[in-house]
Length: 196
Length: 292
Image 1 (tube, rainbow over the protein chains, first blue to last red):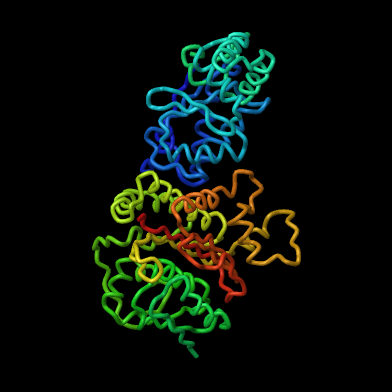
Image 2 (image 1 turned 60 degrees about the horizontal axis):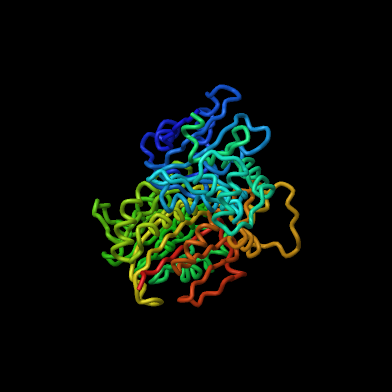
């Protein structure tokens, strides 16, 4: 199930209809609460992908990025998360990314951003192996560990083993940047069709 | 009896200390007159700092306004008299406020007391900042955005930690004395609890013998420590420091009896000054020079 949330609409609806900037903690907390409420409207137990659209957001400061992005991810990255929820950020510009990367690094979180061409990339506290495996899954689409290992081995001089790739994949799954469907994995950011 | 305190001819963060040196020994209920008749120039720090002085006085202070018409006019356009009127008894003629666009005033003196004020500040400055910073200081659009982010974070420190309202002002001017080029300067001043008392309010905090205003500033400004336990706190000033590092900007924060500075290569300020005249709250100044 895919859900699109225009953050600037949420901002205007929940805080003030004149604002176009995501600044201050109280504003960020109010926006996050509304996003969580929208996610909670989905049926219990359903897997949801939420596309959070920043296209019409002017400024995002560090405090607001902490409240809107980091604390949202923290809530859904734990084993007792209220929903099986995944998130993609769309329409972010360079300064948004600066604030987002800063707060992700603070908590060791990772996230998928989608650019205007709908290409996704992984940002945040991400190791080299995690990034390579995620990139491979993103390129090949839904794939099992054996397939991803073969892709990586082909591209990177066979230094990959299925066990190692499986471990990294599990980490990426725990960090909500890939989705496990049976024995196959999908990179968040290529999952709209599969999840929807 | 009223104590007269001369306001220096050029009032900035450095000469402001002369005013505080005179002010420090006086009880808050003593009557004072800030004599600015011979003052010809004031930075955003100087103007917002004078407002915070009034906040610290229990006896309503007086202010002798500058004699020079152009100085009066500039202070008026910067919004100083509008905010000073409820705080000071004026001596001398206060010019009537005119709605004249002032190109060097990026943001006239604006009160900051609640979260909504920070939104107002950001909305007000955004359009002008990009145009002026780009045209006059060679700062590109992305850096202008980070400039406004920095402004937002510094203003939020007042809302979250000061315990009372403060003021912000942003101005560009040619800094002949130090640099010989244009700068943009942000001043955010409050007369609230200050960094030391704010950090002391952290539950369970143990204070050692060396704990003072200087240590509190080092913790907050250099190490990003906040009175809140939340791991996400303290990122605002850290983000500001990163931005200023990239643009050779200077950050200084005065609180209590100490002043800490992140000093760029073009400046010879001391990183930490201690045993200054005590003054309430926190006074922040950010200076970003023109790109050459």
